[in-house]
Length: 88
Image (cartoon, rainbow, N blue to C red):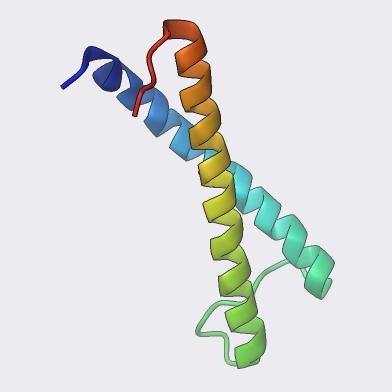
């Protein structure tokens, strides 16, 4: 295994944690705009419709995927700029 890949592992893990927090905050704000409510529905919330629950799940998944990809890519680009080696 390449030394740069091993060295990037802790950086990648930290970026993953940061992207999760960022995506969670983005999802909460987006849900407030869409539904005007503070909390997104749980799958087991009997007072919410199927439409609300599935919309929230799809939106959350999409936001998490986009934020994770953007943060991962930015980290890889920054690593190449600093070291001259692509970490992936």
